[in-house]
Amino acid sequence: LTLVALIGPVIVVFTLPGLWLLTVSTLLANLIGYWLGLWPGDDPLISWWAFGAILGSTLTSDIVDWSAGVLGAKRMGGTRGAMFAAFVGGVIGAIAGTMILPLVGTLVGGAVGAGLAATLIHRTAPDQDWKRSAKVGAGASAGWIVAVIVKFVLCTCSAVILLIAAWSEW
Image 1 (tube, one colour):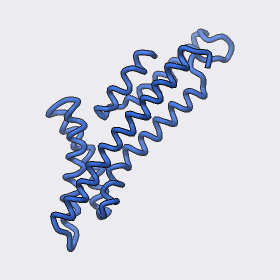
Image 2 (cartoon, one colour):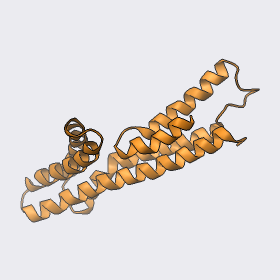
Image 3 (cartoon, rainbow, N blue to C red):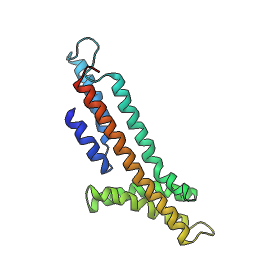
Image 4 (cartoon, rainbow, N blue to C red):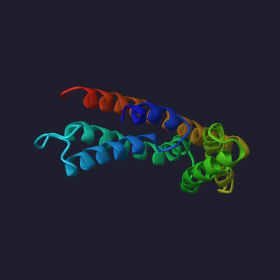
């Protein structure tokens, strides 16, 4: 679990599921230890309160991840289509970026994909020019990057909770 706690925040920067790695590992450690009778009484290795905090961080991270690009486009005045395009473009861009340049390409590709898709779709709306559409795309890209930062912070906090819970009587 210590290794998982150290790996999680690193891989989340590259938009990989570091928080889900922490959550599933904690759950498996508790359940397998319980089934094998490794934990005395009903005390698991990681308290269920700590597991709940890690799960809460994971779910919060997913909500932020799914909505940040959309909200960035919306904040800059994007149409509904542009907001949807920011989400889809971010996912496609992250996948394409990973294929072009593994790890770093995921982050860059997601931001570029969200911004480009939001820009292009917003431009198709009536009375929209390239300058306004570019602002919407920049908002979507910024939202994608903010989501990665928030996920990193949440994953780091969850890793600290996991380490404290694993190595103490908490």
